[in-house]
Image (cartoon, rainbow, N blue to C red; front, side, top):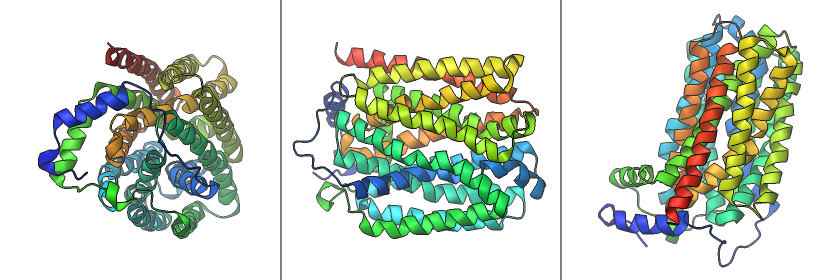
Length: 426
């Protein structure tokens, strides 16, 4: 079926919304088992979001000194990345709905390579922030389209299970990222970290030769500016879609507040060795991997929205602990580590379920839905990291405050998802 701008009727979209948002799809009529090769490539594409930031986290204090930038400016390298990552998805998603997934991914890899090289050659903080935006514009194509590819291949709970599996595999990147980055920094320089990302981009580009196209021509839809705006507008008017986005958005904001603030909280404030910072950061990723697999198994018996609410409770409790610790100083470094660990582990119950639920609200436009979901959620991440940068005072308190508020917001939004689920059945 071809969708022309004049044919994009609200009633037709509402019918699709009612069909896919009010019940849990049981999967495709024929769902082949896709090989481990495809899963690994999709995991590598999803990992671009984390490896682009996690690899250089241990180097941030040294980079600040080398580039004569303050802590706030270095935190803005995270915010700038998120700005490019958020805005770029709005372009790549609809483009892939029209031209397929492989070509936009290849173009994104090339842009990522150029941006990474620019970061390595940056002479000051402003240049680094600018090249981080370019890097993000390329990286976001890989992430948003990898999610859309999962939706091309699977439906319903099966899609949620596969998304959790992919996120478990891709968790190797943030698990190893700070540790590998710390070792590169120890042996070479901070510039070598970004040259490493250039090599990663080239390797991923080569791997696309092994990745089949998941959106055949007969399933593609013409995309004009008017059509894109209509689709985005319709998605924004679906309460269930927005509840999923808010849940993931609050969690992303808290997560990137932690990413932007933890290097200075651990290394500068608590005097943790940069190499040990990688170990502390990686511990949370191990917890994330466990909860991702647990989420995949529990989806066999429980609804996606129920598990999402569990993730909201965990993030709210952990966020409160972090906020109290950084405000009162009670518990010191050990309690801060524990709170951050628990908060990160909630990822396994939050992110895969929010993305799967959001894409299920309008599955015939999964590329566009994935783009809007990613843009809004990463946009929230911009706010979280920017607030830490804006209120940086040499203590972990700004980070703790933002994470605590975001944990409560995540819980409230997850409860709203359940409320929309009930209203769909009335």
